[in-house]
Structures are given as structure tokens and as C-alpha cells.
Length: 232
Image 1 (tube, helix red, strand yellow):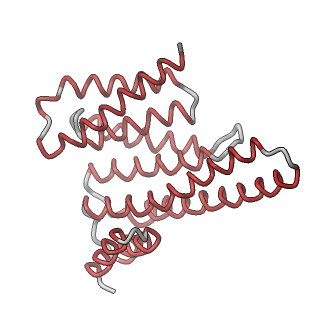
Image 2 (cartoon, rainbow, N blue to C red):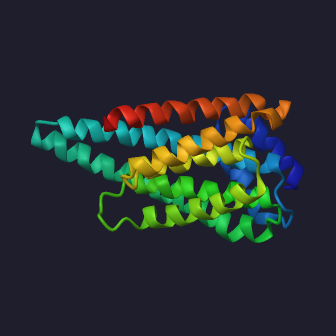
Image 3 (cartoon, one colour):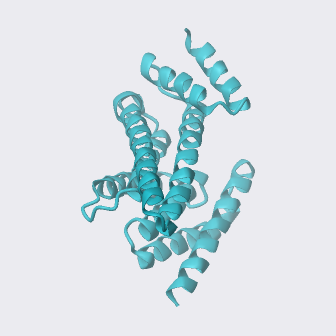
């Protein structure tokens, strides 16, 4: 199947909200063709994988809460087994995403913005796996930090403070510090500094990016408010 047909089918699957099929089509684009992915292609891949992961993360949270509240021992054992099954799905999907990026996307990515985009994406999926890892030596957390750091070093030197990718990375990286690294002070500092830098550069914000940038800025500000109130 040619590249254009795969992308068309991926878009069709997105409209139909059949994200597993969308993921398969876009993975085939990444694996089977030597062309560098365009920004649009990257967004399609991100949407496909994210929607597949969202349902699993939501299921894990629900089942984890049920397990914590279970009083019947037999039911608790069944819930525990079910949670482990979902965790396996999260890890399997996360590893599939990371392997696709490392083996088939980054090696042919020359655009600085795309490199930052996919290192951010790696950080996100390591974060999702770290959420379910209760071990004190959380390898996913270490690898997630390295991926976010790599993306951050690119965006802070190559992209303006109001660029949606830079702001989106600041949002996710600060959540990572808060939720995974248990470093609320670092999360607050990163989110607040990113918000303040964007405010100072607001006049340079292009009309095309205005809606996305201001929406992420609002989320950064809301998170800072939440973290400060939790620390009080």
C-alpha cells in the first residue's frame, strides 16, 4: 500500500474514532518509508497512539481505586489480577511507541522542531509507564527525565517562549516533576517560568498559534495555582 493511501486511511480511521486502525496505518508509514515525517504526519501518529493509551490509563485508574477499596478477599484478588493485565497493556503499548520513535522516526528526522516533538513524545510515554511502576527504582522515570531534558534543551534554544510545542512540553514536563518525581517545587518553578516568559513574549505570538498557546498558558497557570494550594 502506498504512503498517501495509508495516510488517507489513517484520517478515515480518526474520523471513525477507530484509533487502533489509525495507529496501525501511521506506524506503517513510519516503518515502511524512508521519507521524513511532516509535522502533519507526526500529529497523526501522536493522536493515534495517545487515544489508544488514554483508554488504558483511564481503565487503570478506575481499577486501582476499586482495588484500594475492595473488602472481599476473592474480589480483591480478581481486581488485582485485572489491574496487572491492564498494566501489561500499558507497558506493551508504551514500548511499541518508543521503539517506533527510536528505530524508525528519529533516525530520519532532521527538523529541529520535529526532533523536540518526538523526544517530548518519548518523555510522555515513559511518564505513562512510570505512573504504573510502584518500584522505588523506577527506570521509566529516569528515561522519561532524560527524554524531557533532551526536548527541553532543543525548544529553549530553538523556539520562542510562546511556541505551542515549547509550552506543551513545559506543561507535561512540570506534571512529570510533580506526579512522577515528587518534586512540586521544581514543577512550580518550571511552569511559572514558562508562563512568565510567554507573557513577556506575547506580542510576538502569531495569529496561527494564538489559540493553542493561550490555552496551554491557562493550563500552566491553573497547575501552578493547584500545586501552590496543595503545598500550603
